[in-house]
Length: 384
Ligand SMILES: C[S@@+](CC[C@H](N)C(=O)[O-])C[C@H]1O[C@@H](n2cnc3c(N)ncnc32)[C@H](O)[C@@H]1O
Image (cartoon, rainbow, N blue to C red; front, side):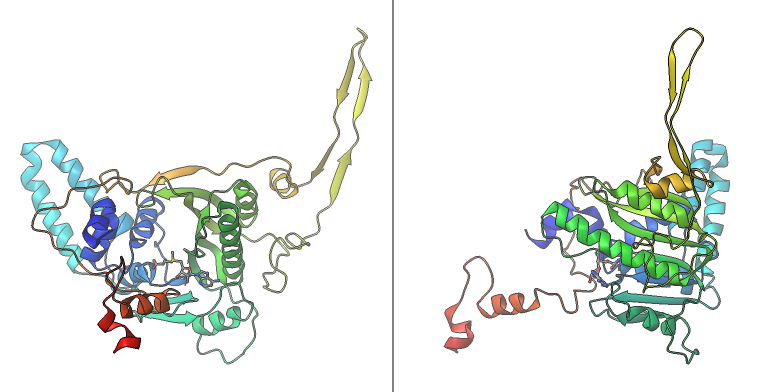
């Protein structure tokens, strides 16, 4: 597949290059923000599994440069559409107001005291206002690094949590093998690590957004998230292909249960569950014989004082997270193929991977004269 055929097949891939994003994933975060207003009152953010950095670009442009994407941009578009529908007599007003809105966009409003920390296994090219760390989010040694990056003035090397972060986002994905169950398992481990990091740094009321693969046990995970967040929803942005099992959990209102202490040494859900002892009340089955001779049996149950939330923990009642599609309907459909304008030239990616695992293979192929049997003997290292 050549560069321009990928441009046709994937409108977001093409758009990302045109609009200066390092990856098409930027649109997923922008569309999630359109639906959930993620960045409202947010100044401290941790971006996990961040390379090549398009999510960090969105954060940097919204929080540091004060640009308006996602919800803010969507609201403006809706307003313009509403005015257009109102008819001719209002068109002049609509034009004026849209000019004022555009002017406002020019007067960008950067936020104060913004701190963005991005972590990835891969090196990441620098971005304005973003502290980048090269680390493994599944490793306990990452937490002190993260805490120091969040608060560089702190001299302590401790890994005790400081709850100062408004939003943790994670787009973590393993190198997909094609073995579905294995990929889902590895991805869930990444999500697990991301959640445990989030629990160590989020402030009460904070938000957590992370990529999930909708495997068969995803309900359990969602139910566990519901214990520590007030609101948990699953969202599928329009820029995420319908054919992919990828979706995003959007958790709002971080509310750790009383007595819960976050720690990477004893992560949430280990053998100790949430680490909180709960009193169990067990009811035995009851058998009564009615006057008419019929026997009524009430089945026994094992429930806690707290009701539904504990049912979730025990795997009793199932809890189903609301599922939302997000992204403006006028946005590109990521599964459609579009015609390219005649005069369009194919663009190079904004930020090619810095050190991809296949780098050596690419170098060897290049030395051998390229792919598809075009090997030129005189260019081979052994023959020159
Ligand atoms: C889909 S990409 C993220 C794209 C990114 N959100 C963006 O917008 O540019 C997934 C990333 O997860 C990272 N990753 C996978 N396992 C990781 C781990 N254990 N620790 C840190 N990063 C990891 C990969 O290196 C890869 O860069």
